[in-house]
Image (cartoon, rainbow, N blue to C red; front, side):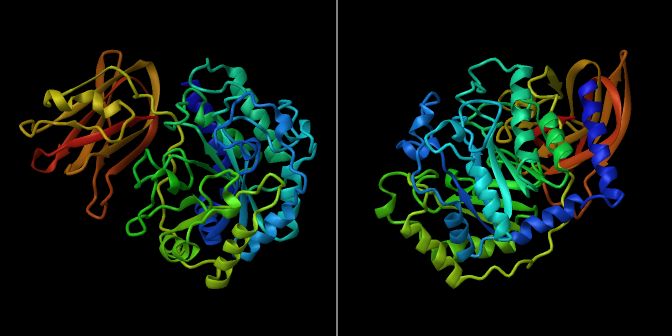
Length: 463
């Protein structure tokens, strides 16, 4: 309960700042991000010097030795394509830091280069009038922030110390994109490293820095789960729908074969940029999505001529004219931890193959399916005593015809109704968010109504 109210106080403070005119609203920041339309991703670091994007976590940092590093060449390459920003991977999964950090020796400063690459890049971007975006991996194999090691408060403080350096030492940052968090390749949950804590910390340092997590593969497209921008890694099969997306979004893709430079790149055939423009940038921009194309610098610290020419070709065939679409109003992002996951639960009748624990298994592809013979289905989850609850999120399965639900809480053996949620006719999505004044609960029960008793629930979130 303490964690819930601490997060709530921080977010209320941020909201007050915005309301008082001391900052931009979230909707305005999301609109400005979508209006950027196109940016260049840069992956550069230890994986550049190995034939693998996932390097040995104990690889000696001395292999990092770009002899002709020129971040201004990167910026000019991005500008030639019509990019409005560069998103740079400041720390990839192996934990090597691209900035001058006091948190670890595993950084650019302890290499033959011995220079703050991030400082050089951010200075070059600002001189060019371009914006700055960071990609930061929570998964950190070198510092053993990974699923196979214990998660400790010290590790969270380590992450926060790095974020403090990044968000106080390099000027305004448009967006920070987290990676390796609540992802199959990271297996670090939002409880292992607290999302609300990290989110609130970022906002305390730079309230107008958008927070994104690269989690578009997992969560439904109808709501913002743990991200203020819906994020898709196109190369990993996370492809946004240009037809029905209604959220401010980002899609990223490598121009070359992989994210980091490899020895074959100078002679490799690159992605067809004419096709990228026609099939990705243009339709995605019209669907509220900013596109980020990765161009990986080589071991000298320069972008190869073939990649430079490909980016220039984009600038010749397509012009970034800025704003083209007004984003719809999006639901407020869900940033707190779903306390129902894995808890003991019960429900009214369903077939054994579709029982109640599919509704809180943190998997949006499995469903609890109520028997159509049950006219008034219910689902219940046990909580710790007097747990603070202030939001319920129900995600329906395919074919479900839910018309609403009532939230009930158990306190000292007595059930009482808190709020009722009704699916209004214009509401076509399958994610139903019900926020209410926080109450203490020993358990939560939802009583559902559905058309023709057809109810399928992929996930029930209790926050």
